[in-house]
Amino acid sequence: MKLTGTQSIGIKAPIVKEGDDLASIVTNSVLEAAESSGFEIEDGDVIGVTEAVVARTQGNYATVEQLAKDVRSKFPGGVAAVLFPILSRNRFAIMLKGIAMGLDKVYLILSYPSDEVGNQIITWEQIDEAGINPYKDVLTEEEFRKAFGEDTKHLWTGVDYIEYYKSLGDNIEVIFANHSRAALQFTNHVLTADIHTRHRTKKTLKAAGAETVYGLDDLLSAPVDGSGCNPDFGILGANKATEDRIKLFPKDCNVFVNDVQKQMKERTGKQVEVLVYGDGAFKDPVAGIWELADPVVSPGYTKGLEGTPNELKLKYLADNEFKDLEGDELQDALRESIKNKEDVAGKMVSQGTTPRRYVDLIGSLCDLTSGSGDKGTPIILVKNYFDNYATE
Image (cartoon, rainbow, N blue to C red; front, side):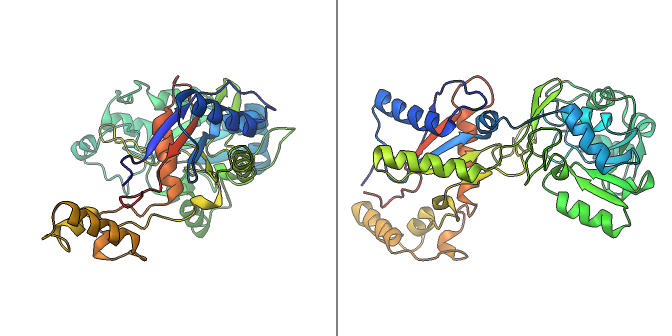
């Protein structure tokens, strides 16, 4: 029996720039790391590449002026409610700067006590003490401050996002609400800034009579004055590059991952799988923040990563069907069950397993391994991911 399971290895790579042949850089970096560290490339290995370096080599950037022009074209009247953005200096602030430049008046509607991914402005305890109904009450900033006080700094960053967001344009008025129809109290023109609930939000607004409804996924979905773009996600998944420049989520990722897979096959003879990964899909148990501020974990992956795990719960088998077995006899029975398993979805032998998509699981593993700071490993090699207790 093979005695090692999944391994996640960070691969250091050169700093890439626009126009670089990233597929070749990734291939070379993985093979050089394998030679240096003494491991082999095997069939079924998975190579993850962070979305940031893919977007950088694509040159997928836009200026806030280009974003502002696109906003103005979609809201020619110059007034819009910007609904349910996340609280982020790196993510949304740079977008709000461009949005405010493109409008004469912005009604910025923040959800409370926290944004979509768990960044808190206030706490649920404060809401209880104030007697506010967050599912119904729509508050002006003055009403919000009266109910909850002046101290609305983020617990972890120390930033007062209300003040910070207002500083990004002298035309921004902050409102607090948790139902999308609240926007229509101020204007019939709405830009939805939520990420994972955006389709429902758009549908709800249109049904309620909104005249204009766009989402962040509709902005820069095509080039504006030579800008980058993302036809699938617009400025969702974008983040700050400089004070006046935005790095967009990468596009055409399936072309890139298939190129890496092909090069690895030519160089090693092995069939590896490849994915581009962004934020992992996990939640911090202390801060309560859900990491996934990107629209998806993986915007591109090879076909071998489609699907979900089909796994048996070894603990269940050991405690139930094979409870009278011990030692080698128990191990042999478990391995035989794994070798002969069929589709176990919904059956008791699979209870407690994780039926999430491979790309979300592996992408989250890659994001945790590479981190978001100065580790310098934008490439991750995952080995033995598809092995199990019966693998020899």
